[in-house]
Image 1 (cartoon, one colour):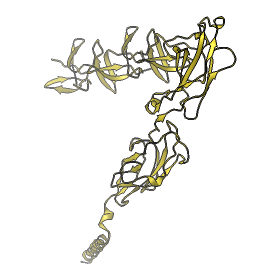
Image 2 (cartoon, rainbow, N blue to C red; image 1 turned 90 degrees about the horizontal axis):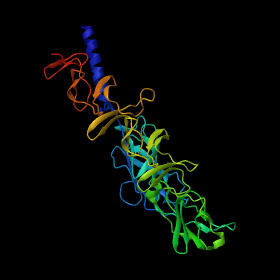
Image 3 (cartoon, rainbow, N blue to C red; image 1 turned 180 degrees about the vertical axis):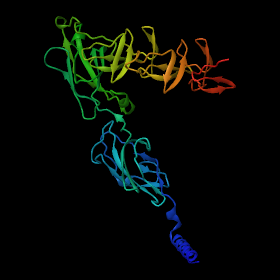
Image 4 (tube, helix red, strand yellow; image 1 turned 90 degrees about the vertical axis):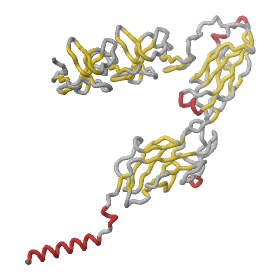
Length: 408
């Protein structure tokens, strides 16, 4: 009887304690697993300064805004990392730090790590993030580059010494790349494009007596610069007269397929070339550039797609880089050797392939086989869509053994 009373008293106490605990505390706090920030900046021109943080809307809208559009967290503070007194240039990427706070820390919290894989910036580019406790997350990002027109070069003229030495001065709002055209009268004699220099020797092209001048403009150099930077206006030089007794014999001219003065990757029309500092080009061979393999034809043009060298097939993607591993081409799967120590790296493999402890089979064209296939007199089944060989199972009533062979 006494034992029964003690148990009853304990049960009553537990019941009373349970009633005193708020129901909400029994629910687990959920993790804010991903974050999306919407950012917009009114169009800036070269020379403008950044708007103040107070001009930004944090609840949506147009113009200057940074908001979350989420009921789990909200934007509580904004701070420029890029100085708001600094004049913007073409290509400048203003950097901002945003403070996010959980709207109800009893229900949702920031936990674990936040990076580019789970932080999305609509209207900008993610840079970094850090947490302060479980209710605050700091996110740093950059807005899209400032668009505009580059400034024109200055002081375009001829050097005093000799003939044909063109020079000009750079400006602050510049890509550092220039188009320079040589004229004799009103006729264009020589074009030099995307030159990474502020001088050029045109004398080898002054092969006839006459009055010469040149024009120079600032142009975007990289592919990303081409997205936000526009060519500047032309700057014209003064004129210089070259008499018949001083004309050039043409020696020293560089009439290669691509522009003078550039090194590395150079695009002419729709073809990419690779130029070395000594002026030579990669031709009719492989080249490993930035740890990737590229193949060039006899004219120096980078090739793409399926290419055969020494009876081995390779696949170069749209960027020209050699591909390894499994690829899909014309709705068929192919396997390109990923090993740098066994076989030929990047070469298409035919026959049996051991991949992730599973066996696959490709025919003489390199295409992965699917369904029932006869190989070396034996019948095997390869799972459609996935391609691995079936082993120790039954396919539509037909058993296959540990080697994947169906035996009658």
